[in-house]
Amino acid sequence: MKTMSKAFVLFLLIMIVGLLALSLSTNTREDQKFQRIDYWQVRWQAQNTFTAKPWNDDQNAYWTSSQLMKDGKPVNSSSAWIRIPLPELNWNTSGLLIRELQGKHVIVYLDDNKIYESRRGYAYEQNQLLLPLTRDDSYKMVYIWVESAREKIGLTKGILIGDYQDILTAYVSSDLTDVVIGFSFVLVALIMAFCSFFLEGQARRMWLSLCVVILALGLLVVTYSPFLFTFYPYGDRVYTLLFDISLFVLVPAFYEFFESVFGQGYRGLIHRMKQAQYIYSALCLLALIGNALTHDRYFKIYYVMTVLIFGVFMLIGLIMFLIMTLRFAMNRNRAAQIFAAGFSVFALITGFELIWFYIQDGDYKLVLWKWGVIFFVIALIAIMGRIFAENRRQAIEYSRQLELFNNELQRSEKMDMISELAASVAHEVRNPLQVTRGFLQLTRMNTDDKGREHLKMALDELDRASDIITDFLTFAKPQFDKIDLLDLKEEFSHIENIMQPLASLQGGTLAIDIPDGLHIRGNSSKFKQACINMIKNSIEALRNEGQVTIRAWQEEQHIIISIRDNGAGMNEQELARLGEPYFSNKTKGTGLGLMVTFRIIEAMGGQLEFHSKKGEGTEAVLTFPLVEPV
Picture 1 (tube, rainbow, N blue to C red):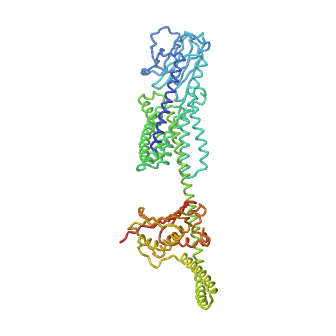
Picture 2: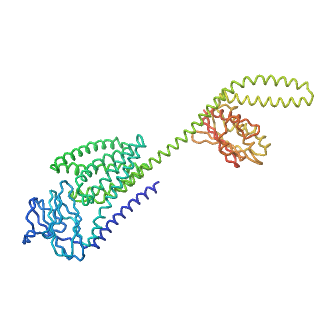
Picture 3: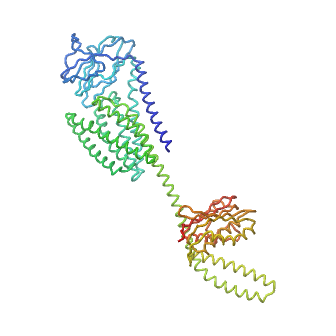
């Protein structure tokens, strides 16, 4: 188990490192394939209104050099002009790709011709721009006017120039992966939600909470990506609302799933944190509605509630989940080990990115968290699969035990019915048999030799019928008149003296190994009768020079007695019918002897089991409670 857990964690780490390496190599290939511009100039403006066009201004004193605009915007500046000198364009159709442009209102000019404009009425300010160019645009100037109320404004990454088709492919594929991953999660969640109709109770609660977690994660991945904003800008307001709603729903749903799998935690901590998160998520949803109705008039308050404070709630929850998961995993909880592997990757990646996000005062784009989401969702689904597999195993085990119980119940009812029949019939039959036997004995004295032989046969059959009736009475009323403390070594010493001649007559041997100090409570004569019945059956099953081995030993608070032979053995069908009335492998057997044996052992508080294999022999195992001598 430990080896599998370590291998699973190692696999997750290797996959993460591989994906990060792939992402870095992709960026490196793009930098090698396209021409990169890391230098431009900026002119800050105190007002956020569109001013005179800068290409009419010949004074360069207002322009300052800015490499990736690392210093931030000056105080009281909310807009800026950016100008980018184009190099020589060696492609018939060229493309200018701006990976990340921060701004709520963006206008782009090529010299004095406006070629692009975007105005957003919501808080999402990440822009990606792909501008088509031609050879004739070589050495021209690109002017970008950008306005934002936030601290971060303007260009934050370098600019790529290359063949338009190549750069278009890179532009589309850069964020398409996020959309594919996100919508895959959404599809999985919808399928799982449909399957929840077939579940009930705790299983449905767990399943639905996982559905909501996967759905919310999928929507977060999709709506955080610039892809939809770039190619489908008409629903941009909906995308931002979906992102916030998904975030507010995700955290309480995750608390719900965690609680349904691992319980309420130490002193109900998980349950109390879940309730607090439900309340705060509801407040955030109310704040979202208020912010939408007021058209972002109170956005700063909304930002503090839903980004800063909510992020702190998430960090606290991540740390708590990580600690509790590791604690459960250390207790050899298999589900916790799987959860710990996936959640640790997710928590570490997301936690470090959130911390860095706050260190950068919100000026950081979360990019690695979606890979943590993938492994985390895989771990969650693996946990659910394991839980359902365990439930199925328990259901099968319960069905097997129920079948055994039903068989035992049917056997008990059958035995009770036979007991009543035996008790009512045996007494009525026994008395006439005794009278008949007496008259036959008197008649035998006055009969010739041939008649005496016939009467002897009749008396033998009457004795056999009397023995059967005695078995019936013993089976019907196995209560003992006297209960004693039985020394097994002494009891089997008497049994050996009785059965050794029969074993020798059959050509077999009897080996008894009973240590001193083993005691049980019961009736001596009935115990000997039961053991003699089983030993006699074993001797009669021997072939050629066989052996019957009798051993006894103590196992915890029980005494185990084994009677084993290497005779003919039985198949599974014959073994299953042992103890049934009138079932016997012997020609003249009635099966009553073994029925009586079962009843005696049960009356003494013991259990009797048989193990056999055709051609190898049979073993009878008796289990009695251990009794310490006073």
